[in-house]
Amino acid sequence: MSGNESGGCCSPSRPAGSAVAAPPVSSRRRRRGPAQVLVPGGRFAMGDHLDEGYPADGETPVHDVELRPFRIDPVAVTNAAFSTFVKETGYRTVAEREGFSAVFHLALADPGAVRGAVAGAPWWLMVDGADWRHPEGPSSDVSARSNHPVVHLSHEDATAYATWAGRRLPTEAEWEYAARGGLVGSRFVWGDELMPGGRHRCNIWQGEFPARNTEDDGWLTTAPVKSFLPNGYGLFQMAGNVWEWCSDWFAADYYTRSPEADPIGPETGESRVLRGGSFLCHDSYCHRYRVAARSHNTPDSSAANIGFRCASDA
Image 1 (cartoon, rainbow, N blue to C red):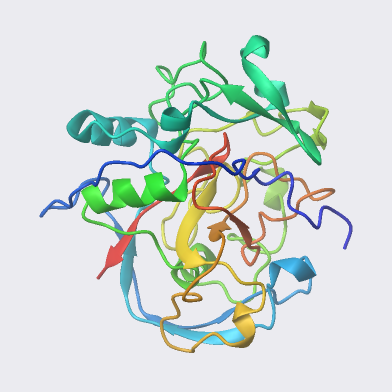
Image 2 (tube, one colour):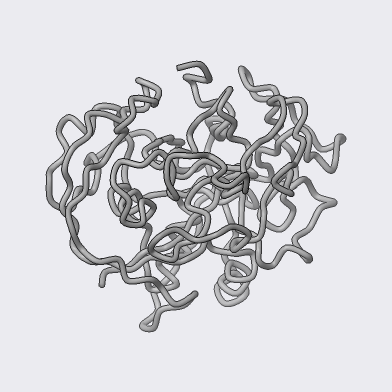
């Protein structure tokens, strides 16, 4: 398969350094956020049925997984929802505490705030003052994007929100099972054809990556969380738009040793699983908006295309 083996279009890792610790966030007795969708328990075949994945991502072997019922947010956590969390807790994200995050070069609002480009992926720029409130740099804001997915969120930040909301991050197996929406072995969350009936079904890249995005789907960066049709379980944008953190540590060989019932990932690792692809995915470079596709990043990393949604026990 042609494309990017390293995943550089997906999201860059935060440079190594001493991270500023976040204050603890206490859980609440009642759940906060949108009403969740109940996903019935069951068995499914997890992994890449069509042999289209990158070997280093570990999308094979296809293996049976049995899951208990669980609940999951119908949409990614929005700027409005995250703002409520911040107002109630005073929480500051990793990007805010460390003063910078990764911005895609075509969306950059403040050229003077650039620290430098990411080695091996120069379309990613480390930008001072970029964070969830200022997605493209310090002069940008989310005042007109309350229903867009919140971005520049690390795994640490996503976990803090989920704890406050009385929820948790989904496991990788839960995420894929929910994303499939009852379909068996399909390429995408809606079927096998990218644009059935000539209609866009997700927010990904059109044009020539990384220099020109024709925006045929209507968006250069994030789209509102209900911009496209939901899948069979009523879940919106489980493909494209933003990468979504899962609770699992990542290991490329995990599918060779994953337990059959309710797998939760390896006990330890260096990076956490990301699922779903983002507005930067393109089949010529990063074909990771397929439902079986996997990616990963270090838990303290943040970027303009990383968000999350929450799950909870049934």
